[in-house]
Image 1 (cartoon, rainbow, N blue to C red):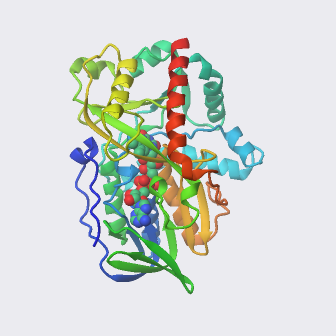
Image 2 (cartoon, helix red, strand yellow; image 1 turned 45 degrees about the vertical axis):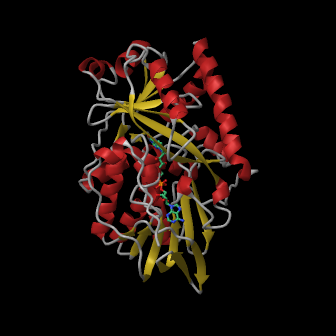
Image 3 (cartoon, rainbow, N blue to C red; image 1 turned 135 degrees about the vertical axis):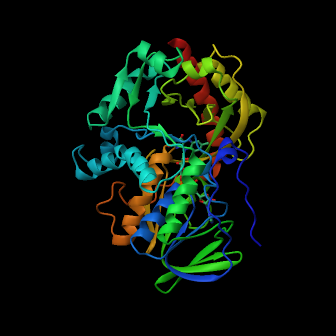
Length: 435
Ligand SMILES: Cc1cc2nc3c(=O)[nH]c(=O)nc-3n(C[C@H](O)[C@H](O)[C@H](O)COP(=O)(O)OP(=O)(O)OC[C@H]3O[C@@H](n4cnc5c(N)ncnc54)[C@H](O)[C@@H]3O)c2cc1C
């Protein structure tokens, strides 16, 4: 029996284009490659492999986009959490080293790559490339904020500083004094985008099985057999794209990511006055709080506002209150903004805040850990994974193939995340008051 995992009751589920018809796996299949996870990473991998003539199946425990891909803010934010210099230092490489430069290209081309893909496959997902604003929440973070700006600007990334009046006009809030805009950022309706990617992969020849949790996998000679409740798949290559939903399927992988809960609230449709003042040019927006505030407008003219939360499947009153507090902090002039839809999901955070590709065993690869920036980057990750499958070589990839990097004391991650979020929110508040 397959367990039906329902999509959360989100604005995205209420407004997405219909998905392609799929069903659970009910047979024994043999294929070249099998991908676990029907989110952006898995679907993009499948699309690229199918286009290259590889026979490929995707299996997901839920529906297409059931994980973070159908639940996120839909912000196409093409810069990670570290500067190129910090990344080079972490890898003990000079900044000009080709591996660092490949990673920089992977990052900054990820947004244009997504919008190109949307156009190429005619994906109906309210895609808008109007730019992404990032703003500092207090003076204390300015040195790091400026370092990020300078580090990425030096790579040729199209970002520019805004003066305070521009920032206020473009965001619709005076809560921030320093910010920059990345002109290549934008937004999508994420569930529609995931469904469109799935349709493109199916059209290219991939198969997709939903409501088919992979319970175990075992080596059989040169190939692998993956077992679901009502069927199994044998393949030479396995790609694990399970991100923040990674379970015990492959020993040791779960310990390399900490699932952090992010929540989203969609307001009622905005009044004309609100529409004219909040993000009038339809940018996306994220701040530097450790417990981030991020928001964007939707095709039906709501504001979707996000932050960290506590319950990924059924956020409750405390999570809703966190978003209301965020809305009142950022938009005190709009006290009537309320939350009509509330939902959450899991982000995969890695120990070094960078995405990882790991070769887990002969023929088994994983790519995960976009640390909350996976709309553009998980899409780009899928292409990297497909390249690995086609070449069986990671030497030229933007994300280097690295050994597993587990979190120490991973079994205590829940309490660790809860304490960190609580303490970080206090620091954010204090810093915002000092501005
Ligand atoms: C609330 C929220 C807001 C976010 N906002 C943004 C944003 O605005 N911008 C941005 O860039 N990023 C954002 N992110 C992050 C982004 O959504 C993710 O980085 C991205 O979707 C990851 O895609 P993925 O394909 O790697 O993983 P997922 O979409 O999480 O997919 C993993 C899939 O693996 C499946 N799976 C796991 N184990 C098994 C198994 N054993 N058998 C079968 N299937 C399995 C799960 O069912 C799931 O569908 C947000 C995330 C959340 C949760």
